[in-house]
Amino acid sequence: MELPKDKKVIKTRHNKVVYDCGDTVAKVFNATKPPADVFNEALNLARADQAGIDVPQLIEVSKVDGSWALVTKKVAGKTMRDLADEDPSKLDDVMKDFVKLQLDVHQHRNDLMNRQKDKYTRMINSVTEVLDESTRYDLLMRLDGMPNHQKICHGDFVPSNVIVREDGTACICDWAHASQGDGSADCAVSYLHFKLNGQDDFAESYLKTYCELQGTTVEYVSQWFPIVAAAELARGRVVEKDFLLSWISVGDYE
Ligand SMILES: Nc1ncnc2c1ncn2[C@@H]1O[C@H](COP(=O)(O)OP(=O)(O)O)[C@@H](O)[C@H]1O
Ligand SMILES: [Mg+2]
Image (cartoon, rainbow, N blue to C red; front, side, top):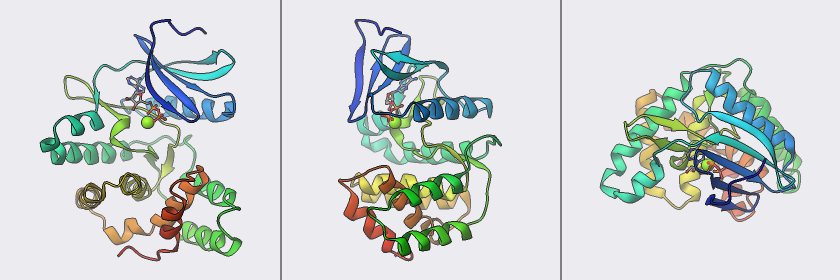
């Protein structure tokens, strides 16, 4: 397919460019991106849609100048990140809506979604250069001991992935990391994201709010921290390597 000449760049990352193409949004990956990852993201999006979650409509997966692209229908609105940046006085309200929405996603099911434990096992096994064998073994044992759940987890639930329409309804994009499993793991990923962003206060109040609304404890969620930090290392987060390693050695949340 060809992208329109008047397309606008929404975001550029090391491995992709996201374009606003008018009626659609095209996420164009660079040539090194394995096609299986692009199709997996499209499949996750389709499965989240099938489960009844409000997501952008999938239009196509196709080649743009030799690179794979995922095209979705554009959702008019502002991301929760934009809303929080625009008016910091609304931060608490936005955060509460954000947590409620995440818990709502966790209410949905799709048996066909990748299993969270399989996904984290693969990721932990892949960080052979950074984590020694005994650390990987400890992490896999910890993962194995965590309860089995079937909640749909977005896997990268952050404010920039939530688009709020003018009527107040919210649409969730970016399903590359989705799985079915324990919602507390999903919470641990979001918390880690805020910490990595240097938003320490926001991270703490997010975690507290999640635990209150879900009826779980910070101690329970924190059992996932070393596992999700190791999984982030598998995503090749070179810059944050030392920070993530410190999380892997942390036994329990303090
Ligand atoms: N269908 C869509 N409609 C409107 N905006 C979108 C859509 N898909 C993505 N976006 C915007 O593009 C940004 C980047 O897309 P995303 O899929 O989250 O890519 P990334 O993996 O780089 O985070 C999002 O934060 C959102 O602002
Ligand atoms: Mg995103």
